[in-house]
Image 1 (cartoon, rainbow, N blue to C red):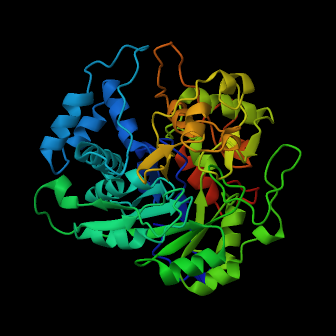
Image 2 (image 1 turned 45 degrees about the horizontal axis):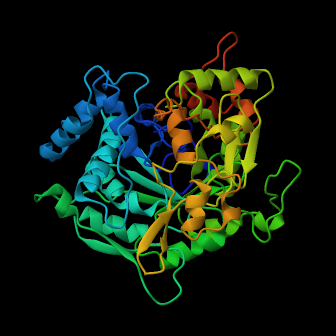
Image 3 (image 1 turned 180 degrees about the horizontal axis):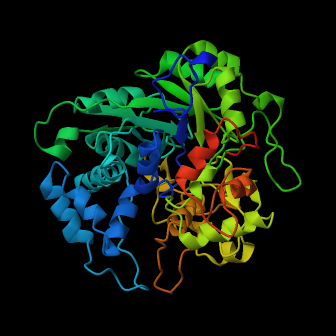
Length: 493
């Protein structure tokens, strides 16, 4: 599995990958990228967020290479696959300017059909990533996105996923959920609901047998890695999680995507970014003393930083940004080339935006023309929340659960009891990231959703992978660079 010998450094976890390819956001860490990284002996990871939307839009585009249909042909319940194809597949693809058919948003009362769709979509992505080789494949989720996650886990497990990696929250319940899903057992888990003022508890239930409809052998329980930014959280999860936490990805604030907020009162620099201080330093010795494997993330994507991580006692590193803009990622070729050209010119700034994400977590946004990072494009977008992955359940006056998103129409959000100040600067991460991979929704008015691009702080250093006269590079170029012990250049996330 490895291209270098690290046993002399005292690494206790040599049966684990040195490099984890990061989750990269909706559809960027596609099955092609994860499969390539896996074939190269490391841990390829697909993003599990929004896969029902992505799969159905691929089908509406005609599934030109037949990959989705091939994967669905292997789904263990043919009737589910057939219904998905009859509902979404358009031979030859939809007209370019026609809107995509929407997938319903997930709720506490999510229909069985929507659960089946989420299961099948996650199966498809993992199946394709694992197809044709014996390497290991993981899937990345956000803890904040509770409602779609459980059927998503099950679909990934039906395809034999090897790792589940989760951040953006405290995933205390997830290990036990994976245990029960592996045995096809029904379970109930707590739902995080805003506005609960008494001892009321809200739960969601999932019965795998409802979906699968027949007896099948137990599934492999994937290795579970929690993305954390403190030793305190790592210790708590080790002691109080509902099942076994197998390891950690320790992520610093320079990593792309969502970041943990600074500890204490939020202070901003001149660019409006959160200021991280001494209290945000990660106690790596404390994490090492837990005795579980861990990988360091956030500006660790290079040979020097890999050696540093191993010396500290880490099992390896997680790398995001270099993979996000390689040939195999799901980001459109046009956007990748534009960003690489900017990097070669010494441009391409990344803003840690404390307001952009409706999740409440700081979110890294690449400042690039034609994207939501431009004020005019942001302000021109109608505030519509129709994908709904980051919506938050809340309690209405009658005790019924409603759903709201700080990025939706301001008046609608306020009518639902939201605070108007929570809407300021919010961007639709869901629609923006889906547009970044070339699947933008088109509104009846003709408005086409604009992309939003995320990357780590050291975006400009992707130039190290680009040969002179070219504006692209491969995932193999990234791995070869990191594993080259004679390479002593800087590192990036």
